[in-house]
Length: 233
Image (cartoon, rainbow, N blue to C red):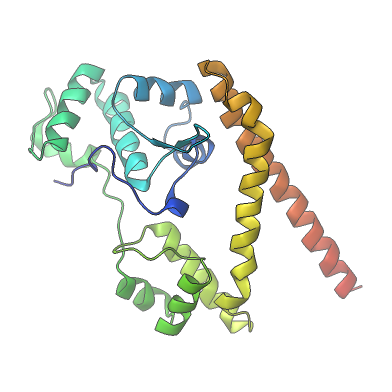
């Protein structure tokens, strides 16, 4: 039986997600999930995201899988938080507990088992070369790790497709830098609100961050389309 990651596990800085990104990632499975729900689960000690110096919550991929497990147990088996808390505490302690009221045959069905890929798996399934992967790491497009999530698989596929068009991973170095500048822009915009101690202000800051990111996507796409129109009048 696959177990959720232990509390406090961390990935590379660029792999961490803000609260708005977590909500977006889990929205299809849990459409009723909200900022307040995530804060409540944190207050109950069920998940412990890290925080930046500015106080922003940052969730690792392991934190997201832990949340998926918690929400699945609540939704599908109506388990109270005290039962879920005890189950996670046993998992964190390295034990293999059973879930009260859940038949053993059904336990594996509620434990998320998102596939992880080794570097060799990524190269084999996407047709990428080792040189392309190394260039992507060097350009900051991919953060090196022992295993990778499905999102990295999608990135490698995109890099392979771009390479066929003559665009190499090293040409995308500016994309990483541009993304970091956008994050700084967003953090500066919401900082006055996020510094407030009340939960409502912090929740609004997270919502505003996601909203700003979406608007920046709109502007970026418009600029690219306008530039392409000039190239192909």
